[in-house]
Image 1 (spheres, rainbow, N blue to C red):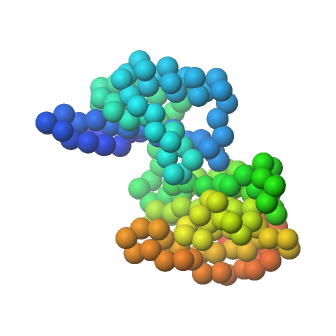
Image 2 (cartoon, rainbow, N blue to C red):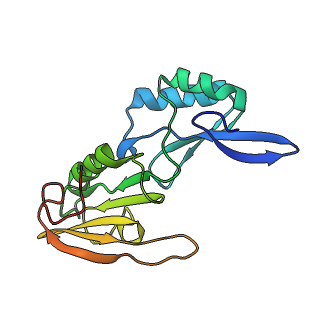
Image 3 (tube, rainbow, N blue to C red):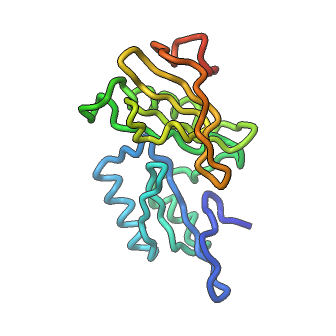
Length: 187
């Protein structure tokens, strides 16, 4: 059985190593927390890995250390359902990028707040991009939102896995996906 809040990473010479991936909405982390990650990784012989979902994984851990690691980080173990919203990847948008057309950080953090780890029919990933450059890879996510001069375009059904495909556009030029009744956001 897996330690609570951990993923099995490797089995080498009969030894198992695990990883934990604490939730970091939008990949934003304060310096003090980044220092805490480094201290914990150092203490337990782990390695920090930046993930493609804008999180920081601590890998190379022993099962018996996992509970103490979560305590040292002063966090609840990252739990969810096997089939849930796994990540909301967010580009810099107008907050940090000269190319941004819409506030992807604000929308992405709101989607994260509402949906992260919520049970779904299957695993789900979301992406929010502030412009057509799609730095959050919104076009290959299960649900993607891409900003333009006139609003947001909503896409669904993308995949970057072994059966990769681009998502399909369902709502073009939406002004406010969070408050627009025509869009897929439901409490």
